[in-house]
Image 1: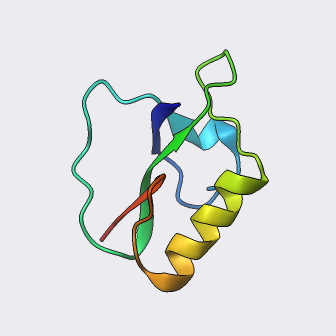
Image 2: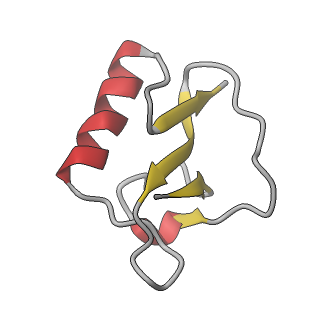
Length: 73
């Protein structure tokens, strides 16, 4: 698993919207996805499988960070 930062809030289900951050970004709040933990697809992007996507939806719907999805303001 690798840490990925979401760069494009408009397309959270697109692997190209993510990058591997040089440092862990601060994530506080509960409105938007900040980072996810996911398997690297081998080219520096996350594998957004059903498990990861479901956890993203759960985090956003409950406005609570989960094990693999951290939210921000």
